[in-house]
Length: 435
Ligand code: NAD
Image (cartoon, rainbow, N blue to C red; front, top):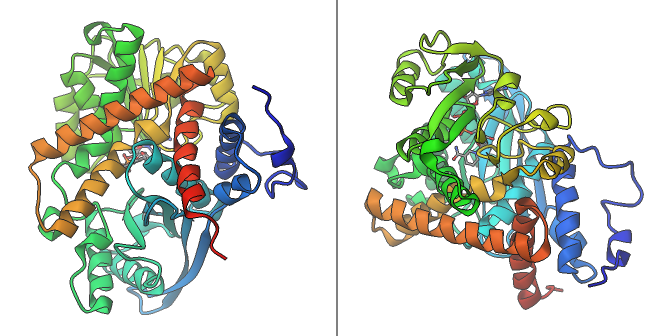
């Protein structure tokens, strides 16, 4: 098959402009998109249409702080695509939030929803703030005003937020309430990842880690690896990392190292995950001081001699600097964007199978979709039903992506982009361009 570059010459993301900065997450996304788009031979104009965010909202949020003074915060909501359905994506609160990161995360949501075949587009939101320095009252006022400013953007048929870094069930409950007060009716399908008492789903909290476990086991089966002989290191022991570690352990793997912001904890003979979970629950959420392990750095954790590595903390952790020293046979990306494009090339040359974020951590949005369906039906499922349906969808997505990567002779990451972009492009072709 001959591949023409003609389409890409006119791309707004190519000419003019400096070379791609691969640690800029949006450009890292564009770099993978380029390769998949060439394989798909997207028609002219589709490239520009599909890669660019559809709408970007930037909003100034005034908050009366506990001191009585007004403080301004900057908030974002990026709708990358609503071609396949209402847009879906989390909201993060962090001092590092910036537009490039939110644009990348929104685009990943578009491809992720298409890969697992849930009928959503992609979005992401964020507020630049330091939630650790804010009181619950300040966080509530910030959340309510951010929601009020974006009231015309959100909605169960428009754009549906969920929790992400430093946001949680309580923050979703405040969004639900603010939206509902303005809509003059209770609208629980406007957010997912909310408390069960307000229409949340059984199994949502564990869904992302459960999905990571499912695709990791599927990859192990493809490579002929046995759980009982496989060792695992997990970077990040928060929601995704701790659930993944626990479930892989229940399936027979030995978890030899875990880490969080306080550092890494290693035990060659295998860590006791139940004891770790209890320790974290009793210590205000960190692993600091955990006794039954050797202390290692986060960098050492990534390059340990293990079979499976699960980065489940944050972006840009596996780079050209450390990729050459990674020994794992499988990397399952619990986090969004943990591997840079340069690192991908090195890992691929070394024969490491990377299960990409847009497949590996798609369990969260899959159960968010179940939550939205349950809210709209007013009929709630058992945890067992949620988990069975999740496992089925994650298995199916893994097989489709694996087959696409074999068919085109590319990595699982590019295979996942090919599957995701192809579905969005097919929907766009059918809808046509409104004029
Ligand atoms: P979380 O806040 O519950 O946990 C993050 C963990 O990473 C914490 O243990 C934290 O201490 C640790 N950490 C932070 N910086 C670190 C570093 N430099 N080295 C080692 N550990 C570090 O967050 P989460 O919900 O588990 O999300 C983790 C990642 O997974 C993020 O990239 C998020 O976008 C992604 N993700 C989460 C979900 C979800 O449903 N929660 C869904 C899809 C993707």
